[in-house]
Image 1 (cartoon, rainbow, N blue to C red):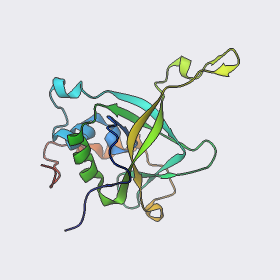
Image 2: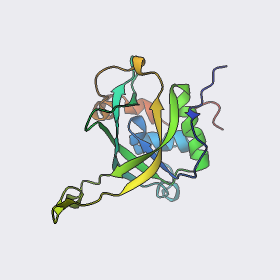
Image 3: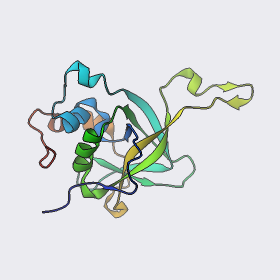
Image 4: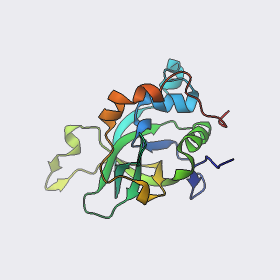
Length: 177
């Protein structure tokens, strides 16, 4: 039996945030993975807030022959990945997420910058840019760069053409009970 758990490089630091840059940016997919229900009760759903964020120093690419992306480190100036910062990630959620991501990914703690699209995020005040809020979060980094396509993965294309398969009621993951 293959190991289907994402590898964590550091012990849990009790981070309750996850940064997601692919299929899990869609709340329906996140909830399907974590709760086996794409539309969980309001009491569960409101325990997780989804906010736009940016991860500097990485780029996102489509995994060859797959519907999902992977990220890799990239020291090119301006390299970054836009995604969603999700709060309220529990140890139980993390277990389900590790299994879902599988052995192709390594879970790491990173620092992401909130990007809520507010005007103050980009204004300059008295000659200096306002400091943006940063948060430590868990992210899954792809371990096999040669298995990535050169092109960027397209979230809008995923939502339009593929998401219905990833957020259906019968989509479950063995070994995550």
